[in-house]
Image 1 (cartoon, rainbow, N blue to C red):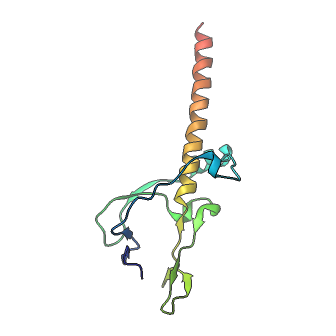
Image 2: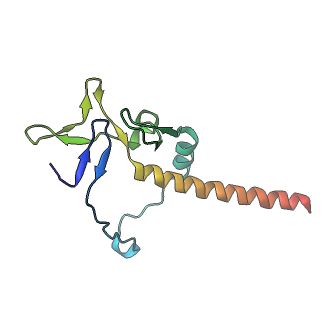
Image 3: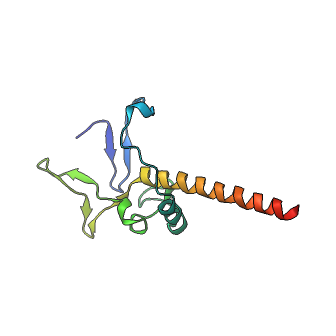
Length: 132
Protein backbone atom coordinates (compact mmCIF):
# COMPACT_ATOMS: atom_id res chain seq x y z
CA UNK A 1 0.00 0.00 0.00
CA UNK A 2 1.37 3.32 -1.09
CA UNK A 3 -0.38 6.28 0.60
CA UNK A 4 0.56 8.50 -2.37
CA UNK A 5 -1.41 6.43 -4.91
CA UNK A 6 -5.14 5.72 -5.03
CA UNK A 7 -6.72 3.00 -7.23
CA UNK A 8 -10.48 3.36 -7.70
CA UNK A 9 -12.81 0.44 -8.41
CA UNK A 10 -13.26 1.69 -11.98
CA UNK A 11 -9.53 1.37 -12.69
CA UNK A 12 -8.59 5.02 -12.29
CA UNK A 13 -5.19 5.56 -10.67
CA UNK A 14 -4.69 8.89 -8.93
CA UNK A 15 -1.57 10.41 -7.43
CA UNK A 16 -1.92 12.11 -4.05
CA UNK A 17 0.56 14.59 -2.53
CA UNK A 18 3.05 14.34 -5.37
CA UNK A 19 5.99 16.49 -6.35
CA UNK A 20 7.15 16.85 -9.93
CA UNK A 21 10.63 15.40 -10.33
CA UNK A 22 12.89 17.05 -12.88
CA UNK A 23 13.74 14.74 -15.79
CA UNK A 24 16.77 15.47 -17.90
CA UNK A 25 16.45 15.23 -21.63
CA UNK A 26 20.13 15.82 -22.37
CA UNK A 27 21.50 13.56 -25.12
CA UNK A 28 24.75 13.12 -23.19
CA UNK A 29 22.87 11.24 -20.43
CA UNK A 30 21.35 8.66 -22.79
CA UNK A 31 22.43 5.66 -24.81
CA UNK A 32 20.90 3.30 -27.37
CA UNK A 33 19.20 6.25 -29.09
CA UNK A 34 17.16 5.02 -32.05
CA UNK A 35 14.74 6.98 -34.24
CA UNK A 36 11.08 5.91 -34.14
CA UNK A 37 10.04 3.89 -37.21
CA UNK A 38 8.13 6.45 -39.28
CA UNK A 39 6.17 3.82 -41.22
CA UNK A 40 5.02 2.05 -38.02
CA UNK A 41 4.11 5.43 -36.54
CA UNK A 42 2.11 6.41 -39.62
CA UNK A 43 0.20 3.11 -39.66
CA UNK A 44 -0.51 3.24 -35.92
CA UNK A 45 -1.97 6.74 -36.10
CA UNK A 46 -3.87 5.97 -39.29
CA UNK A 47 -5.42 2.72 -38.05
CA UNK A 48 -5.94 3.18 -34.31
CA UNK A 49 -9.29 4.78 -33.38
CA UNK A 50 -9.23 7.44 -30.67
CA UNK A 51 -12.23 7.93 -28.39
CA UNK A 52 -13.80 10.14 -25.76
CA UNK A 53 -15.22 8.00 -22.94
CA UNK A 54 -15.72 7.75 -19.21
CA UNK A 55 -14.88 4.89 -16.89
CA UNK A 56 -17.85 3.07 -15.37
CA UNK A 57 -18.82 4.92 -12.21
CA UNK A 58 -17.09 8.16 -13.24
CA UNK A 59 -18.53 11.27 -14.88
CA UNK A 60 -15.09 12.50 -15.96
CA UNK A 61 -14.38 12.35 -19.70
CA UNK A 62 -11.15 10.64 -20.72
CA UNK A 63 -9.56 10.40 -24.17
CA UNK A 64 -7.60 7.60 -25.77
CA UNK A 65 -7.59 4.34 -27.69
CA UNK A 66 -8.83 0.97 -26.46
CA UNK A 67 -6.13 -1.51 -25.42
CA UNK A 68 -7.61 -4.14 -27.71
CA UNK A 69 -7.26 -1.82 -30.74
CA UNK A 70 -3.63 -0.68 -30.44
CA UNK A 71 -0.75 -2.62 -32.04
CA UNK A 72 0.21 -5.68 -29.98
CA UNK A 73 3.63 -4.26 -29.03
CA UNK A 74 1.86 -1.37 -27.28
CA UNK A 75 -0.34 -3.54 -25.04
CA UNK A 76 0.68 -3.61 -21.36
CA UNK A 77 -0.48 -6.02 -18.68
CA UNK A 78 -0.40 -4.07 -15.39
CA UNK A 79 0.74 -5.97 -12.32
CA UNK A 80 -0.68 -5.52 -8.83
CA UNK A 81 0.13 -7.00 -5.43
CA UNK A 82 -2.13 -9.83 -4.29
CA UNK A 83 -3.06 -10.34 -0.63
CA UNK A 84 0.36 -11.96 -0.02
CA UNK A 85 2.28 -9.12 -1.64
CA UNK A 86 3.04 -11.18 -4.76
CA UNK A 87 2.89 -9.37 -8.12
CA UNK A 88 0.06 -10.74 -10.28
CA UNK A 89 -1.60 -9.61 -13.50
CA UNK A 90 -4.51 -7.25 -12.88
CA UNK A 91 -7.74 -9.00 -13.82
CA UNK A 92 -11.43 -9.33 -13.10
CA UNK A 93 -14.04 -12.04 -13.64
CA UNK A 94 -13.77 -11.55 -17.43
CA UNK A 95 -9.99 -11.95 -17.56
CA UNK A 96 -6.87 -9.78 -17.72
CA UNK A 97 -7.32 -6.01 -17.62
CA UNK A 98 -4.84 -4.51 -20.06
CA UNK A 99 -3.79 -1.02 -20.97
CA UNK A 100 -1.43 0.49 -23.54
CA UNK A 101 1.97 2.16 -23.42
CA UNK A 102 1.02 5.83 -23.68
CA UNK A 103 4.66 6.89 -24.14
CA UNK A 104 4.95 4.67 -27.20
CA UNK A 105 1.69 6.06 -28.55
CA UNK A 106 2.89 9.64 -28.04
CA UNK A 107 6.19 8.87 -29.78
CA UNK A 108 4.32 7.45 -32.75
CA UNK A 109 1.91 10.40 -32.83
CA UNK A 110 4.81 12.86 -32.87
CA UNK A 111 6.69 10.91 -35.55
CA UNK A 112 3.57 10.53 -37.72
CA UNK A 113 2.93 14.27 -37.43
CA UNK A 114 6.49 14.99 -38.56
CA UNK A 115 5.97 12.67 -41.56
CA UNK A 116 2.65 14.34 -42.38
CA UNK A 117 4.22 17.80 -42.24
CA UNK A 118 7.04 16.69 -44.55
CA UNK A 119 4.50 15.26 -47.00
CA UNK A 120 2.37 18.42 -46.85
CA UNK A 121 5.38 20.64 -47.53
CA UNK A 122 6.37 18.46 -50.51
CA UNK A 123 2.85 18.63 -51.92
CA UNK A 124 2.72 22.40 -51.41
CA UNK A 125 6.02 22.76 -53.28
CA UNK A 126 4.68 20.55 -56.09
CA UNK A 127 1.48 22.62 -56.34
CA UNK A 128 3.54 25.81 -56.40
CA UNK A 129 5.69 24.42 -59.24
CA UNK A 130 2.58 23.51 -61.22
CA UNK A 131 1.27 27.08 -60.83
CA UNK A 132 4.38 28.61 -62.37
